[in-house]
Length: 151
Image (tube, rainbow, N blue to C red; front, side, top):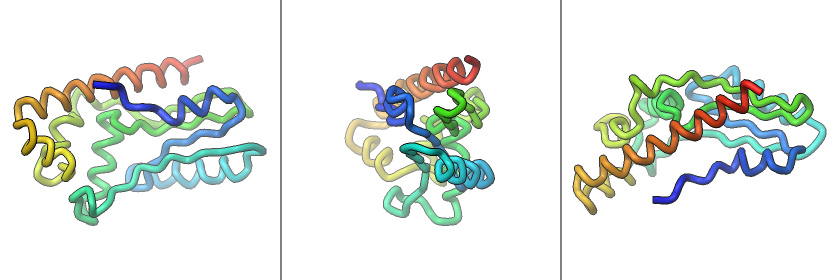
């Protein structure tokens, strides 16, 4: 299984691109702040926003809870990189010891259609093994972001 690409880290290689990962359902204040920083930054900026969608099989009322679970499980950590300061600011707290991406992916209220289809195709045991392997990759990505934020 190939690791998920991280568009934000890829853009940081250019050294002049403002990068923000935001989630309005998890942290509206940080989202607005990131948009303001991107607007005021004198150069290219990219904002990657986590948004739930009915096509994922999520109800509008459970969307914010889904976003929060994605952030807390470090599936989608919130962070910014401002080339003007050269700093990575990590807004997420790692709660992945108590919030499992894999378990949420297949849960009744927070599960997405794509994961339900995966279970139908390969079976629950194999699907969970694949999701848990992905979860390990998310934790490794978070560890890298944490190191960058401490520099």
